[in-house]
Image 1 (cartoon, helix red, strand yellow):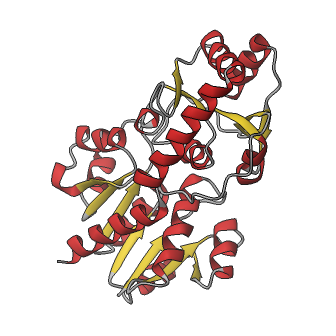
Image 2 (cartoon, rainbow, N blue to C red):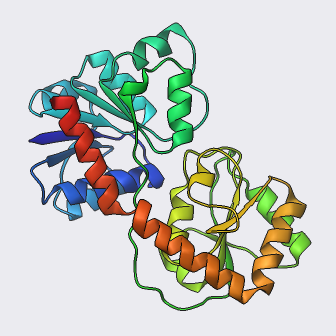
Length: 297
């Protein structure tokens, strides 16, 4: 069986990491992955290095490639629209964002074209159903992240570096000033989490929060916004602390964790265990393959 993955994103964000991890896992299964991605994207480079067949994201070649696979799995809004316009079938669409689906005639047409939707959280699933997608055509498959060996307790307050206006960098900076601490805005989370005491993930909307999952997998407690799908992973007082998007409340949570080493340890251990049970790469791959099988049944 062969599955065509399409992702038009130029940056290596959470969605692209999920495409890569899924495709790498499928290499050793009956589902041969073929990836369509921008030529110079980090996703394409990493996928080739892993032995995945990569094709360039050209409209003229997409229909030809789709005719030689058993299923098409698209991973972003642009590839969803393009695949719908080309009539590619069978079509599985991953939706990662929690903002409402547009209600225009074009949007309604596009969302009728897929055979099945994969929502990364229950919040995203609810948004799809609100937009009129039948319940039976939507499945929740949480992101999966690798669980690696712990490298010891760090001292940094880490937050993701981002230019996305929906993310709350200015709120984190204001909170850090109130708390009297410095924040390291990370360009490389997997490396910087080794030196972290806690991770701060503030955003105005979120499908799930794969960066928060990475921190949790490393046993790092998370301070996160109480928005979107984040509460499905960051469970207040159990695997992290949830806050409203107010600098004073964020600062209080940061200060609380920095002052209480036992609380940091307890939340971090529970967070890591939750990732192993519910947000592993293996579970993400297993549940995605079940959807492929269901669509082709």
